[in-house]
Length: 292
Ligand SMILES: [Zn+2]
Image 1 (cartoon, rainbow, N blue to C red):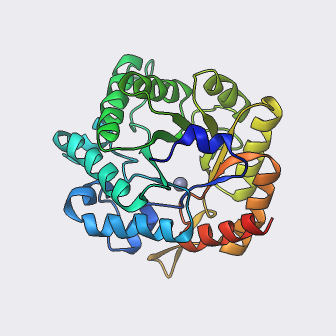
Image 2: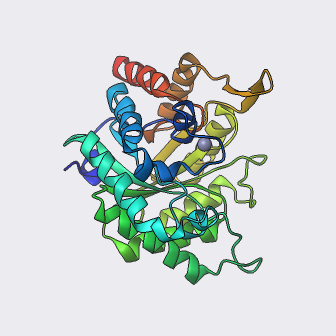
Image 3: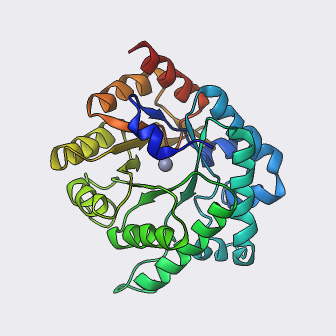
């Protein structure tokens, strides 16, 4: 089984995958339907999705479990399936990944606001994330990857939950999509300082808005904490509607490569793409990194 700690100690960048949600929508997942249900209902599509990133050259793929925590699943009436959904996602990824590609268990936000705004208390959040992390570990993931966090307390709760449930390595990224801060007002400097102290292997940025804004957030993290191991997994720009129905992302693989070089110059150790990025983007980054 691949070992994230060991791979981080080796020279070079760990190439992650690109988007999951927007890719599954291209495969027929109706917009608005939780992608996680396909782990049980359409496992062949999920395997095909993982395989596409493996073929593109990803060193690490994320499980299709971004919204696989209890509050997120309960919104769709699937809270009672949380265990099977997460175990299945991890097992399918493990099957595709083989012995060399890392499988990281994706955990996104609960979608609830944290206390004092309610209704999510810190302890409840820890318990929700521990529940999901335990199922991902049972399914055979090599690490837990917490992503798209906006609230620093929820981010800490996710780390603590994962630590309660498993001994697996943990990585975490936040989304800086609101004028250089997260939606909840967290600055990159504050995020890296707080989260790096939580015994995680890497901290960084994902999703967000433009590549340039993601780069600025990474640069701010790097300046604030030169010794931190950093991750960049930016969106392929912002989505726009074409002809009123089709969702389009304008960042081409070529533009993504240009920014991959800039992220590499900030010494990021893990690099991939978020919403709108495809296996073609990942394959292009792979080629560029190999040529560097
Ligand atoms: Zn995204």
